[in-house]
Length: 214
Image 1 (cartoon, rainbow, N blue to C red):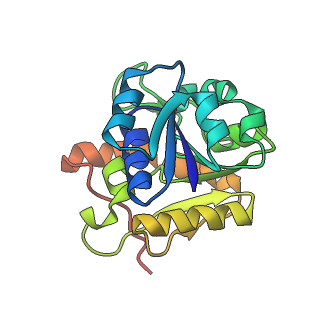
Image 2 (image 1 turned 120 degrees about the vertical axis):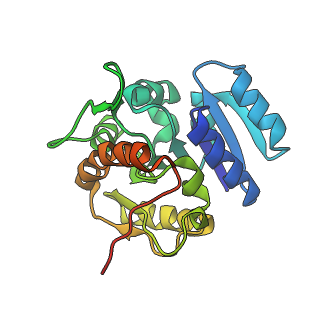
Image 3 (image 1 turned 60 degrees about the horizontal axis):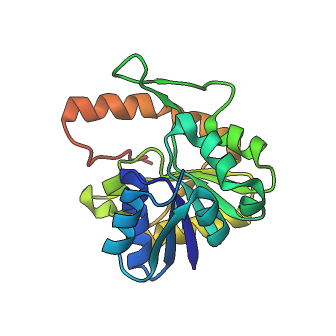
């Protein structure tokens, strides 16, 4: 499968490396090419990895991951191009975090809207699925870093798009991702981040996760 990664930060690099290791062809996109971080990532990951602009990566991918900072995601996706995203599964991993007043961050949107919904409205022809936004990037691709059973979540308006994302999550090692319904569920998923940030500070590790006890 061809996959586009938008963003050159820790999340984009971690997901891109994992997806290459699973046999996918992955192109990492940045605002402008050449980008030193994207080029270094591509060189480190061999012939199935490549780098370009946001538009290059979006056009290349059958599935596209938004791994940009939530505060600039809409701008980055506009650079990626609506035509390049149309009809494709767009996995939104970003969170609308505002660090302008320091730690802990606040949310730029919450309660009655979410970044996931804003992206879906801005790109109505894309099949947006919110996923992996409540987990540190190390655990995203290696769930066994956290002992025992624990959970990851997703939501979106298109059942087939969600099924494709579930396939990817299971390839990462997630046994039973929990589907929370349509894209309005992204409000709750994104509002989990203030708790996640506080937990990270309290227990001094990123390698933890939520478990739904039944």
